[in-house]
Length: 428
Image 1 (spheres, rainbow, N blue to C red):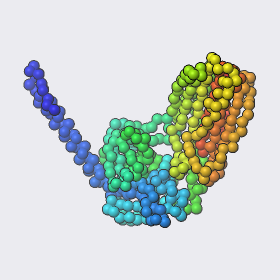
Image 2: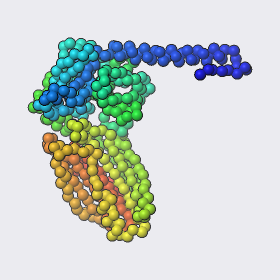
Image 3: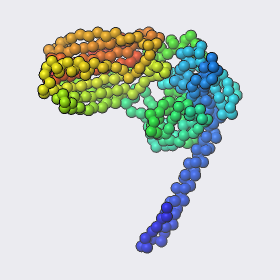
Image 4: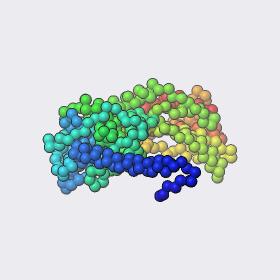
């Protein structure tokens, strides 16, 4: 594209525009040189983490890992090695370095809540990456490294966009593409220092990193080796600690209320949840439904079939002018009968739901149909998924329906959440 100037433009304007083009071209070259230099300096510290199916002796899945300066372990994600944690008789771990050499590896320790794992490192891997002293500034360049789709090691440029909002735990927002196989690899700043660990992607250049602070905490408290027979207890202890911390923080946080139709309901818990609202007008039924729903943003990966740690709650205010009482309440029973969590565990993970239904009158003489359902985790004692739903059944032309779903919660914490949840809503 040519640059043209008008006859009346100062004589130096053309020279200035040419200089801008020259500088932009130089910056592009510098960016390419920077990425190339970072890749060359980091590549030997990065390994491919392979989960090997013992019977076939072939890869079952892959991820990435890296050696951190001053430590004698490979850093990766828990979800990368989870199958070897749960089924060590079926899967083993193998590391592949940048020169094509392979070594067997074992699990040293892990943090299931923040999706981190530490693995034994072969003596031949000596190149390492230094830890950054702090987070980048928002908008700074960040480079993610790993092994996407088993295509070889790659470097992906992106941008640091701060901490993820509405989360119990910090996550770094990375505007760049993380693809399968890059999990567990490092993300580095322009100086080649580790700022986070690749963990997840939502696509469309939206990815997440585990902050280096959680990795440092794991390294400080690490065990020498987690015994294979102790994996389950190790996970259970971490889940218990996470749950207590999470529900204690919830209990200590003021839960505001808001108006929904003619009812008062719980609003958004600040800093922990994202909430949405909408109103649907069902013309053919002459029903209007106003709804608010809130979801926590943190889930804990335990296996390919089981995730936990989620909290969801929802309120719906329904009004009709012409449906009629019997038809309206029949419709309500159908409309609000599909309770579920955002997780879909298998039969090997959890029991079937055990549900109890009752009709309760509150202090305002409002009758409620309440359903409380619980299912137990097979491998983790005292952990349950809980579903609760309450629908008012007194009025013939309006109703309030409320619902929550908790995954991986104790009986005591579920009961405390229920008491607080019900105490917020008022109708009529």
